[in-house]
Image (cartoon, rainbow, N blue to C red):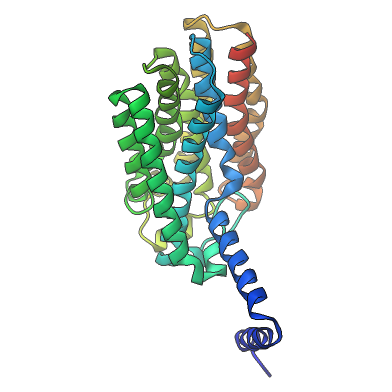
Length: 326
């Protein structure tokens, strides 16, 4: 009896003989493109757009003039940055063997795109290099448009993309705050600067909300991956301080995100509609309860993983809406 692998090989041979060559090439090409797209984790790229919208709305609230072209270019830059770090993470996890031992959930564990199509790995890497090239070109354009003060933010962002999987995931406290740094201060301040050519204390202050929330997004997603991450030498905060203490950090970050928002609204005398941002805590409190009662059980934790994603997307949008309509 044929085993599964030999059966697949036989089926491939039969298909190669039965199908016209142009059709075979078209199918393979489609499969390659699909693999490249999946390694960018497209379902999670909405987070970049949400944060860009927040930074843009802060700039408009403080007097920047609207430009549809500029908004599109900033959004493209943010999405490409997010896609690049996802693609490099998928590529390196595939080569380290982590993909083969990771527990897959809808929110963590990778896309499985490369394990399902290993032949696409070189093309994914070439695409990644192309994306990084586009980012450098776009960053250069923004610098020429608004000034060299943007360069340090761009360099730090590029460093995060290149070192997150290979280096940062081995330094627990740095790994804890790097996601929030990237999507908080770096992305919000970068967006604001491209609009205005200056930095703003309000933009920095409001960037603390996605800072705490996005830190939590990666922190909670590390729970299902704990056993697998150890096999490739990663050392995150959950491994460093233990699961219970790590989850208490998660709870404290949820509370700090919304406490920061309350403080900022009061200190900067923001429009009353910005209080809309606190609506997300209606999901945050049940999420905290689930996390604390889960004891690290992935099945029990699954609803909280979904809530965490929604809170990260919704909170910046609600704050932006409050600033815009207020």
